[in-house]
Amino acid sequence: MALRQDPNYYVEVAGGGIYPIKTWCFFAEIVDDSLSQMPEFFNRCEVRDITGETASVLFGLEGGPMAFRDLTSGATLFVRYASKCYFSDLATQVLKVEDLSMVKVVQAPLDLLLSLSQYYWDRSRCAACRRPLAAATATQWCARCGAAAYCGAECRARHAPDHGGHCHLCFELSAVLSIDFDRYVEPVPFR
Ligand SMILES: [Zn+2]
Ligand SMILES: [Zn+2]
Image (spheres, rainbow, N blue to C red):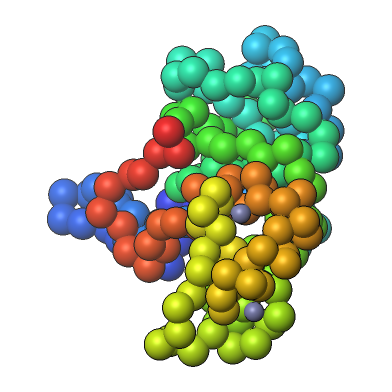
């Protein structure tokens, strides 16, 4: 999560404006969804991020369409351009999401998504036999998710039963990861 004063994420421009200089995405697993279906509590949910830190996430109610029923414990929440703010008690830091098009929920635990991203986004190796994918060889890709890379049609076919159970999650991860994180031009919504 970025703080608006953080020079790693924002730059101050003449006239006092603050602009992002890179693209980022906060991600964390939902660990408490007891208030997530209650608009009077801003569909609040509690999340735990990769460092083990917990945070409260609140959603603006005017921010566009969103399926709040997806906010369930055990799912992973992604929020592009997330920034912290202080809750009304001025002591608790929360993540308030105003633009709901920047939110994506994937119905899988964070650990699983991390292991899939490490496995399949290592584009230097065949996802089946783990041999290095030489630049010149005819790399084959899973046509459904576009994430799994293979050294040839044989490996792709052999790995299909293993990959099949995770292909839809790889497809969801592709939507999260197919963005240039090193620069910022304009906000890119998930949909
Ligand atoms: Zn292979
Ligand atoms: Zn696939």
